[in-house]
Image (cartoon, one colour):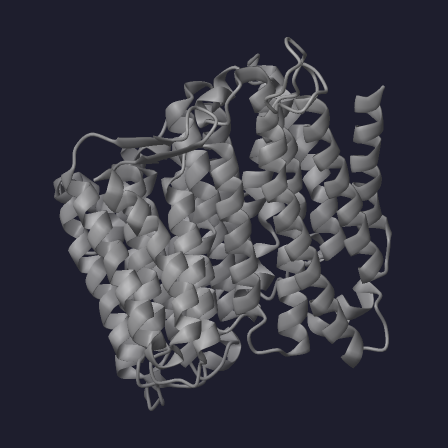
Amino acid sequence: MLEACIFATIFCGFFGIILKKNLVMKIISMDVMSTGVIAYYVLIASRNGLFTPIISNVKNIRYADPVPQAVILTAIVIGFSIQALMLVGVMKLARDNPTLESNEIEKNNTP
Amino acid sequence: MSNITIAWIALPLFLGFVIYLLPKLDKYLALFVAFASAGYALQLFLTQSPLTLQLLDNFGVILTVDQLSAYFILTNALVTAAVILYCWHSEKTAFFYAQLIILHGSINAAFACADLISLYVALEVSGIAAFLLIAYPRTDRSIWVGLRYLFISNVAMLFYLVGAVLVYQAHHSFSFEGLRVAPPEALALIFLGLLTKGGIFVSGLWLPLTHSESETPVSAMLSGVVVKAGVYPLVRCALMVAEVDPIVRTFGVGTALLGVFYAVFEKDTKRMLAFHTVSQLGFILAAPSVGGFYALTHGLVKSALFLITGALPSRNFKELQHQAIAAPVWIALVIASFSISGFPLLSGFGAKVLTTKNLLPWQAIAMNIAALGTAISFAKFIFLPRGGKAEVKPGFWAAIILLIGGLFLANIAYYEAYTVENIIKPLATIGIGWLAYLLIFKHSILKLPRVLEQFDHLIGVMSLILILLFWKGFAWLGI
């Protein structure tokens, strides 16, 4: 069930990238897609259990796998920085074009 | 040796940021990094056994360097050095050199790593640095082209991440070895990411616009090495996991034909070179075991060609045919064109012969057609009029001499190629190609539509490739 929800998020994002015309909306769709991917990592990590793997007095509880979580942290940071960079690019484009429609910008800027 | 490897990976990233602090030393530091990489690659050729480093247990970073990565690293080093020399007397700021060196370092990391997550990080860093280089002129067009590149590569890498976690689920590590036990959907997702990033087949059609609309030195860098960061992992996977070898070869043949088909009909010099890059990447994938040497040759020759076309008076072939170009520039252009068509005495010949020897029987006809297409498309350059005068940048000749000298020197890597039958075949191919060009293609006015290169279509094609990979490829092979 959870897995289905996550895949639905990824696909919503993916189709948003294709179908939305506005560049900012496209970038937000990409963010939705990457949220789905991150959630999938968290889901895979929690297959064995939900507890954080920290030393404590409680014995024999089922820990979540720390490796996918650690890995996805990197991807979150990278995704966030790329998003920031893209929004700056869109900002500069929007200053010179009266529109943010991607096909208009494409028409003006391809030889 | 393992300490040297780690220092070598960290050096460009470290010096890239030092350049910001010491902007006066920018060019010297950048050139130093490129030479350090070249030295490291030459040292790798001397060590016989592959070096594998496992940092922090089996969940951590896995690095593997051997002769295959040595070829790729050498390509990276030489092309970066040439680009720095080309820009030496220009007005580029320290920011440009810093990004160039960070790009160089991230690509080096991609050529050394053997696990999926460090590869992801390396590819994303190279994507960001490449975006900043493409958008360096700050014009509307350059920003849009860069934005499009970043968008497509990031979406592809998101698919790749999903594939990576599926591999982890099956194998409990992120190493390439895990592909053997991974489910087919993981393979399909990872391959989609790498194919798109590397500019292979239909999902790689973002490449022509991006490479042709960037500045001359940036296109040389992009076409020479950046796409190889996506191709190298495919080659590595095909060598490590024998089951995926047929898929990689099939995509190689498809790409070689598709790229050369577009290149033959193209009327714009830089776009022709960019389409031709697509086709040459197919040659690298068609015979993975010898892909390294081909990548070296192609990197040298393609960056030289991009730098030379920057010195030509026009980008349109029709105009160039009525405008004489300076004799020295023409000679450099012809040497590079000869190498890429596979003329003896240049390393393009050795690479073509070596690749042909390692093809499977079903690939041979298609690859010969692709080689013929190469000869046809480069006849456009060879038959240009000469004798005019041209103003070239001061750093131009240093860069070209480095690259073309590399082409001559690289011959020694495979000198066994020089037998009579090996020499006759490329000459015949070139002859037929020239005839076909002079009789048919010189007068053709066919203009291929660019529908497939629109942004939305490029993203949409990804889903089609994914379905194709999953159903027709992996499920069919029964992995």
